[in-house]
Image 1: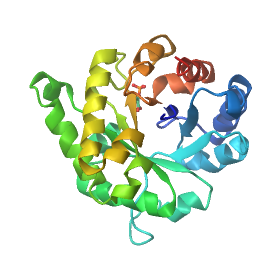
Image 2 (image 1 turned 135 degrees about the vertical axis):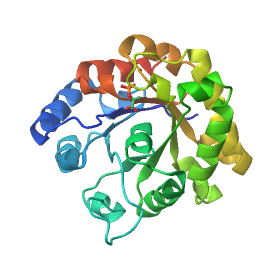
Image 3 (image 1 turned 90 degrees about the vertical axis):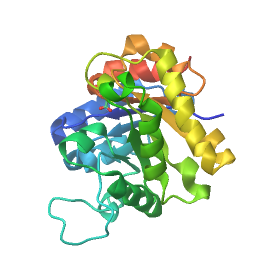
Length: 253
Ligand code: PEP
């Protein structure tokens, strides 16, 4: 059985003071670790990472960054290395979010390096993939997913494939309020899983593939009930600890 994973992507939200307050409130709302229906994570801005690590210590809630450079160090102004994250006891990192692909020219080639570097450093990567509205309308969804998944996992050894979390996030559903139907999410995610299966049957069974795109407390249960959907990457709705905790609770379905 794959354990569901509900991760909140704060994007560019959260001063250190807001982050501290958020974490305290979230812990009040979540069941104790042993009674949670899902793993829970928060993906937060670099400046709030240490605050979240400290506030969430011992709670089982994963703290993840939202980007990372693949190199250990070097002339990469403005970038952060894997060791800079692990030094803070950060446990994961979102890679290839569509906003980074769109606004910061994040390329599959660099993502290959990043996914492998994250694993080597002991960070759990959440690799984001997904088609645009135009690609879906022109029947190019599978082609796009195949390209992004194969490229993103290219440098990952077969034995480590299941250590990557993949988030299927259709671009047209992110921040738009237009959530994919449960059937659309299931279809795309089972396709993503099969792509992993082309590399390793074992990893196909074990890899966790999340859905992301306008997940809210009132639509989460239906999506999370799909057989191949192993959780959710939640943007906007994760900024309210009450809503986020309700989405975690929906994973019980
Ligand atoms: C995201 O940022 O990954 C996301 C899915 O955002 P939202 O839930 O706001 O659509």
